[in-house]
Every structure is written in C-alpha cells, then in structure tokens.
Image (cartoon, rainbow over all chains, first blue to last red):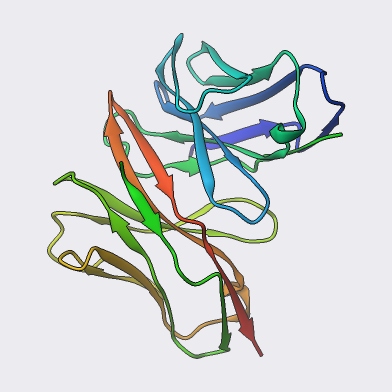
Length: 113
Length: 116
C-alpha cells in the first residue's frame, strides 16, 4: 500500500532563517506531487505541483520554492522566512494515470517568530 | 477561474441526526470533479467522496452521500446518522486538470460539531 511521509511534524523558525520541508511517498511510482498551505481557520491553497522529476509548477508567487530531486521526493524550501509563511503545510500525491484522488500527508505546522 | 463557496462556517448537530453541508462551485469547464475532505483536529486530510461532472448517479460512500445538482452548481455533502467522531472541519474541493496534474481548489470549510 502507498504511504506518504512529511517531516518535521512541527517547526518554529525565526524570521529570515532558511526552511526545508520534506515529503516522500512509498508504494507507487511516478506520482504527481503537490504542496499546499493552510492558514489558520482557512482552506488549503495550492503552492506547487510536480508531474515528474525536476518538473515544478508554481501557483503563487512568493519566497518559497520547491524541488523534486527524486521520483518520490518533494521538498519545499525558503532562503529567508517571513512571518506570513507561518501555517500548516501539506504534501499530497495523486496517481499520474487516473489522478483524481489526492492523498495527503500528516502535515508540518510551521511557526515563524 | 474556478471557485468553491462554503457558506456555513459552523454547524451544530445532535448525534444520530443527518446533516447537510453546503457547497457551491463556479467553473466554465465541462469536465470537472468535486471532492469532500474531512480534517480532524490532528490536521490530516481524509478523502470522503468524489463526484465527476459526467456521473449520472450521486456518489455514495457508506454514511456519506453527495447531492449533486449540476444546474444549480451545488455539491452538498450529506452525512446520515451522525456520530461524535464526525466532529471536524469539512472541505469541498474541485479538481482542475492542467498539464497532467489534478490541481484542487478548496473552499473555506465548515466546522461540524456533533453534540451527544
């Protein structure tokens, strides 16, 4: 069966510090991968998606970036965090064939101080 | 651009009663799909049910059913015989296919509280 992992689970970082959040998927190959952010009490906003290694599409201009160095690994990064980057970050995958359903990871709660 | 609207920020229901969570959508696409996800306090997003725009029958998954009214652009979630464990945030979402990926656009969510 397929599983999706995210780490860390929680993170507190000062403004201006770098960020690296990691997401890995097991049990499938060539998945579509997604990064979402959820502000407190709000819905999810798509940040990035990837349909293959090295292929990243950005949805919202910001100081975040994403990379996909391996087939089942998706990384969210920032060189300098802003207060507005605080939120709950969720990684998701979907089957590249049918792809209708997205399966979410447990999420990372980021607080920028 | 696609848009999902959930007009109920909070709902309070007695245990064992049925509950309907509202969702309306806006799209110019002919082919689209609608999802409902449940988010408990732990934060994980749990897939509940999916309805394709060309599906003739309303989707059902156990106690969950989706009341799909295409002409009214609504996709309400119905939970029958509610349970205490149903207390959570519920999100309606629409898929937008682009370059092989299935992007999801989410509504603001409805917080459902089941009272004993």
